[in-house]
Image (tube, rainbow, N blue to C red):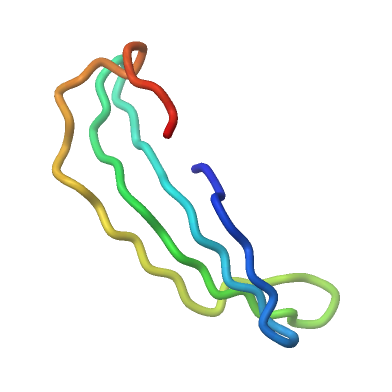
Amino acid sequence: MDTREVQVLGDWALEFGRFVVRTGETIAEEGTYAVLWDPSGDTWKIHREIWNAQAPSDTPASTTTAE
């Protein structure tokens, strides 16, 4: 997971980023995500989240570069 941006919205926080799932040397899945964080008590808890996957890539993980 690679967090790209966090926005504070009053008492809440919204996180945006990219993710990559690797199986050995192959990228099995990759895409973007968003998480809405709720300040519940003394800790932050996930209130809502969404993941948007792209088609799996056949590119070996060792040859990919971060965006």
